[in-house]
Image 1 (cartoon, rainbow, N blue to C red):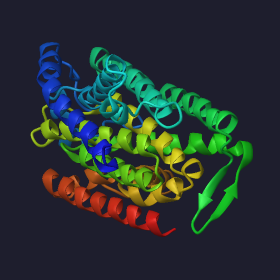
Image 2: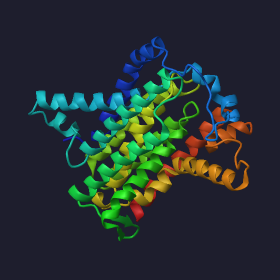
Image 3: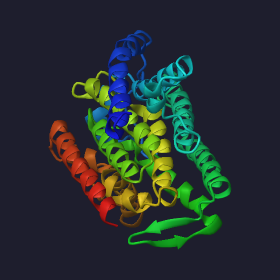
Image 4: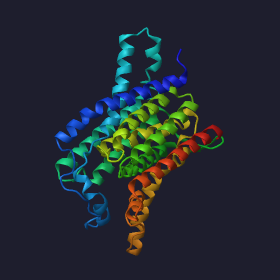
Length: 353
């Protein structure tokens, strides 16, 4: 019988190795078909040119391929498939049975969420590349995410009978049917944080830390299959990160960020009342860099609406640091440090509350 820790690390390592192996193939096609914006730069919501962003990143957008998130979810799905096939080919092998973590009770929903997010994100990236940077409109994407998350929220409420949010020290908050819009809110917040994919290496390090934290949190709750899935995602992210450090070979973009944020929202809920833990309460700690990213965008919009001025030189916050003179690698390294600290802190708190 494999020790639990090996059940987690073997699929994670396999995912990393697969990610490393498939990247040259993916890179070949991304460069062959010029999978980048043909016209760089962005416009503000007021229709004017986003001068600070275009100064910092406009030129890079016409040189760096998008869709790098394929490496992440591709390595995860290939890992799941290989282990599942081996389990079917060798039904009497205790080793493969222990490594197989595709279960209806713990991982089928987050895997499904990842696949759905990957497909719709890939579609948006495709339009972004072929329609001169005009991907699927933000309102349409938000509506799509809202519908998907409402469906998942309904599943938690109706099928899994989740109606409460656990609070520290064995307390809980009864939401009843309002657990559905709460799930939508969490998902939309995490999806909005996908804009952290703006500096080489930044998003990969932050997401790797968060999924590592929830690997440990699920492990503490004895949700081993969910812990293995989360660790496998970490393996895929690290493979992506290997090629995303400056100068980035490609960017994660929507197909990666949508897949990760949708699956993460599911994991957060599964490590709450279902796992008799505090997965939701721990999100602001483990995911602090993501929430700060969203908050900086919201504050920028509100401040400009009420004062006519900008609070930051550019939002989200990581680009503001670049705009005031920080080298991109300094921003990335400091975000990584904060992310690792937050991840460790969330796991420590998970063992206490």
